[in-house]
Image (cartoon, rainbow, N blue to C red; front, top):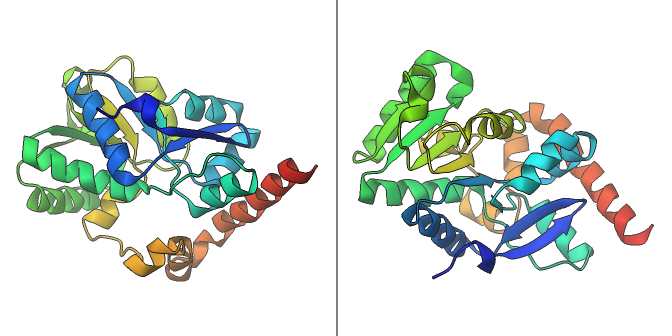
Length: 239
């Protein structure tokens, strides 16, 4: 049986990353669920790593996670440049999609927090779409669930975005009864069809970031983090 210790591990700019392939990551999560092992999963991209350089608290959270799966082609490139373990990009959206299929087959309970920026009307639309796609899953919106900390969720998706979701998980992980906590970002939006995702061919060659940038030009400031990331990797390699 595959479990955490079987994942490859690399360290880039002080941040631990582990990954094999999507199916192997899924096996680890399912193994830990079956064995009732509380688990925190983060999905860093280059922006995460750059932010962690100036925010020690964030770096600490990322490095204390049970799994840090590289959701960004820049991290794969960075590992190669630094001659670290070859990593495979495993997107958070793909992990969430497979987990939801598993959840539907097993009637799991899933908690969701921070979805759609907390806009009630949009959260209800998201929830309706998810229930249509995965009718056997018991979904809960934590903001609307009294005493949610006492509910034994199989999965909890924190969707507040970089930093906020990881801090939320850190603050609630030990005092609640959920098993696996994942920083999911906008993954549920993609799966519910509320936000279009890049074509498969663009994902396969690592250009999903470009698709997002074209559709959402406001992301330009965030993509500048990739430039800084590349510089930091080159600096670590040669200086």
